Image (cartoon, rainbow, N blue to C red):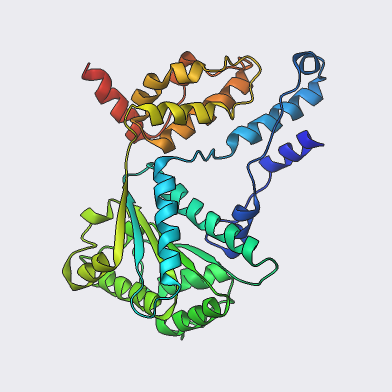
Length: 340
């Protein structure tokens, strides 16, 4: 039965976390546990049973592995502190901006902060109709109306009349979230807002409108937002004066990197993998991924699935050499190799 459940997960197309249904599904879903069969039982599987067993393991490795890093811990602690402080604040509330390069774990970290807060709220207030956390993304080439629509879409509100302007939609959203006792609003992909344009300024003004009409802590994340002009001009200086900034980046080749590799290695469910062999390859993994946690996660998970499909049942350097990862990491690895 457990194997069949895992197989069904491959066909389970989840709603995105930018909808209330998808967000709650994300909150409610714990990492799936999967136990390897003893070698004798594994060898005795019929062809049909072996297909199901392998499909179940593929589903297990397809799940994003979340290992608590120092960045996740720092962002969670800072977000929790701001949320507690903002509960009694009547004036301008403090927020948090998470900025860094692509694949440095920003989205994972802010989602873990939201998950931590929502689970904590549920434990304190079981059975309530609260919406403790909202998660939206800033729309590319967006407008105030498009941003307001992102909030409306998260809440599952019915289609909005074409005559409704951004403020009408925002007011309706704010009232619902006030009634639902929303504590945290997460706005991801903040780099989509180009402050150098009139549209970007309007977008920024509308975000400020939400912060002034919604008694919640706002958490923002984006790619190197401090270099995008977000903190320039009157609007930018106001945002900079209200928000703390936490930067994410590639991991240096140090103890935490090896701990990160070790944590991911414990999730492998392969029959011939030698425990500790990935940690022994920590330097290779750092060179391949440039220290990017997103690239590392993809490389290990893709290699595990390839090991199942090929029948090798072990993640080795030779196998990982055949796995393509993102262009940025591959380019970084080539530069490092040519520099030696």
